[in-house]
Image (cartoon, rainbow, N blue to C red; front, side, top):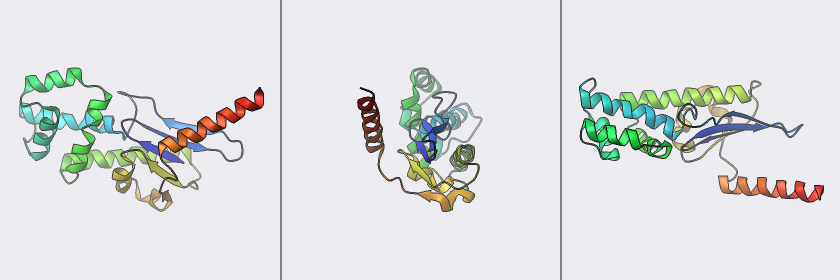
Length: 179
């Protein structure tokens, strides 16, 4: 089973008997992609919003978020929010990870771990498959995966480019067999 965590997120497990692939998540931004960079970013920027209007502390985490988006006041942040896309929000994930000990960031990362656990449970109710976290957030989020799944975590066998190549080769072989 793989759980791909980057700008977006998706999890997949292959049925070795029938060759069928089951997929969880991957519905896309803004309503899906739980535990992804964009998902973290959408939630993290709330801390900066609250800092700007006095509903929360104007602390180092808030200042780092604001600096990352180039905003020093409410108007500048509003412009960024109106223009931001999935990639822009995902870029905030590195700020969250850099501030992992901050209470707000720690809660976000913990929530991401819970979401990863839900993906794993949905794909493997028998709790028997090895789990590979991949993508740019795979390694940083590893420690937040629920403890029950930690013993099953494995390093990915290859990167996404190699996986894509294998899929293309398999499809090319299938098409050649039909011709």
